[in-house]
Image 1 (tube, rainbow, N blue to C red):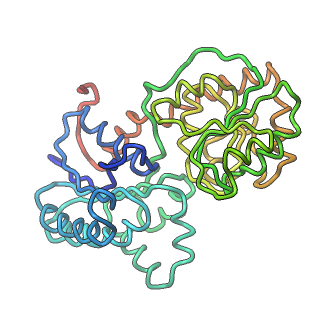
Image 2: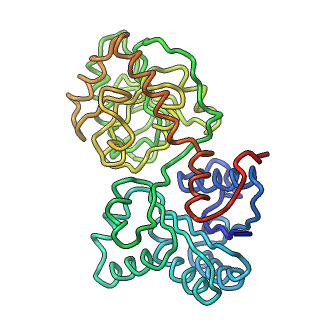
Amino acid sequence: MKNILLIGARQNKFDANDRGGVTVLFELLIKEFHSRDITFDVIDTLKANNGGSLRTLLGSIKSIVMQGCKYDHISLHGTHNSFYYLAPVVLLVAKICKKRTSIRLFAGDFGDYYDSANPLKQWLARQILQHTDTVFFELKFLVERFITYNKHTYWFPNVREAAIQNVKTRKFRKKFIYLGTINKEKGIDEIVETSKRLPEEYQCDLYGPLIDEKYNADYFKSQGVKYMGVVAPHEVPALLEAYDVLVLPSYREGYPGVIIEAFAAGMPVIATKLPGIIEMCDEKKNALLIDVGSTEQLYDAIVSIDEDSYQLLHQNALEAFAQYDSEKQTDNFLTKIGYTFDSKKRT
């Protein structure tokens, strides 16, 4: 294989703070490609960079048709929207020009989307999966479910750079942190109610953008909860060093990047029993898992941690990060799509 055409959503050119998880992962893949001796080009599918949804769709289709035949491999990276709208075009161009293809589906909701789709859309999904050379899902249970339609279906999880890992020993100081968007489905109500019951020596602070009308600085102040504002991505590693445990009682998640960042910092997690989180976290090894919506279980999990149990959770969290190392997973991706490279030649 000589060159690759990557298709996916790039960083917002007009707002550096607009950094969705899909964009972060695609930009990280591009960075990994730059660090290797790989010839590639990119078609940007972020609507903010291309004048809106319709212009982005039409522009992407045009670019795939005009450029696709110039490359040995066409690789589409996106959510179910890209899968349905762009994958058929990719496969048609690849068939005409005799090129190889891969699709990487971000997030963990593809199974739900497939189940709720009409028979025609389900048929189209199966055709796309069957005719793509290599398919990647972010969650293992999606690999297991859809490998029936394509035996070359693999796991490509949410990842982070190994450089963010901090292996220093931690001590338990009863300091807990929530880091993410501030809205109901993240379990913010459960955190607020739990915080009210915690003994005075416990600290549980909230960080992230306010996107639900119910929540604002005055509301949290009235509840006796510390809302600390928004954190820039480059500030996250240092921020996590100031806390002991990540709290993430979400109602739905895929593979949360914040859990990977916590593991990189040797920080254990208290999170809900969702499919993606269960894949990432080992109960009573690097995490404590609770039922969705259970304030009582959240409280019990927090107060159950002491210095001895924390040290075990901390060490296992550090070890858990290895499988989310961007460099290793990119090497695996390239191997699976048949790209021959020298792993020692990196810049």
